[in-house]
Image (cartoon, rainbow, N blue to C red; front, side):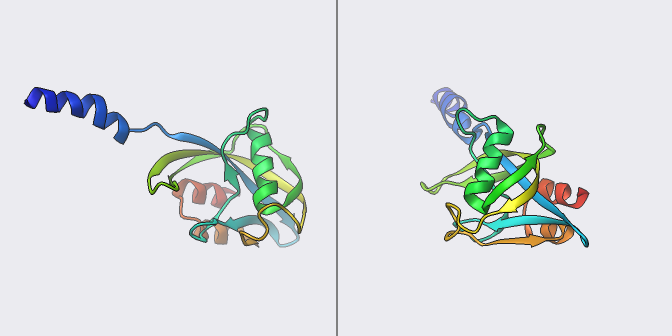
Length: 152
């Protein structure tokens, strides 16, 4: 009986508990001002906490392209220059509609904003604001993202 329990645990339960991380792409949006760099943060739709625009990879787009698409949909970024290689990664637990959480690795692309639009897909669902990198680092929850913001 113990053997059957151990076998069920190692072959059925543990794989569920040790789900692999899912990948998302994120745009760390900034602009240069006379007072220094400013970072664009948005609020999440569910908890209202401050985050960077991010989402799942999009078929037909590379990482930077998908990150730019998310920056448009979630923050209204119309024109931007985006780095082709990620500036870093951060990890978080994403809450799903079924009440479960999944581990996510977000690949972050540095994005220099040239133009923002006022009318964009999620304008009514989120707030957006510009912050100094230090203040943005204080507002987000993820330690690796905080480090990236402070390094700006």
